[in-house]
Image (tube, rainbow, N blue to C red; front, side, top):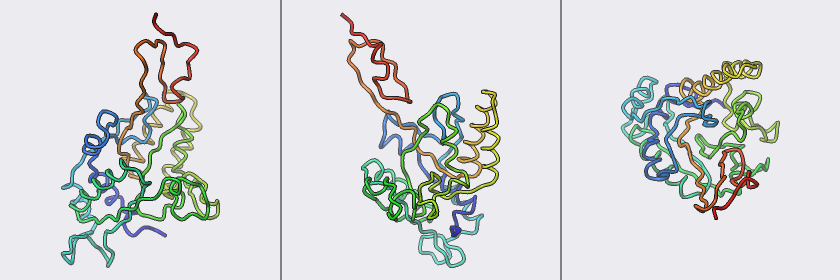
Length: 258
């Protein structure tokens, strides 16, 4: 069913403006997290460095423009008898619950009420077709989890927002587009990408698609570029960390100082 207000681009833009990524990074992640509005983060040359800002005044103005106002003075915006109340779900995890709280607090300042829902990770991340609480079903308005491409070529990662990838009952909720986003413009951009063979053209197309998803159409709201800390003894040499494999992938090249 079409969402009563998330189908409105101004509303989606307002939500992105109302997310305080910097505070989330500073208060929860520290040096291990950097605010971002990029869906594709690696490799570095494919990062679009999509613009973002935290601006509650701009967010409120966009909602006003879209006709969502607090008509009955109860602190929550409404339109056509529908109030801006949403369920925001994620898995049980202290970092995620703190992130939820920060977002809830700021959304409330612009008249959006969030009901926070926390689901055990074993349930939230499972693929059981009959489990209504997993991320594939996405029976909520917003949901949050960590994601990223596991290959230097993010083509398959960008497939996730294609119309044909929508998770639904007919495919046992097994496909990757759990948000059920569908935009023919994005599908056409993806078709262009897979037909490209020139590396530089592909790089620019990936950045263009990233910005379409996060800035122009706001299908997804990236939050944090989360690092994966690793430590090793000072006496070890030859360590070469990569985001595409485990830390000891090149252990044959490791040596220890005498």
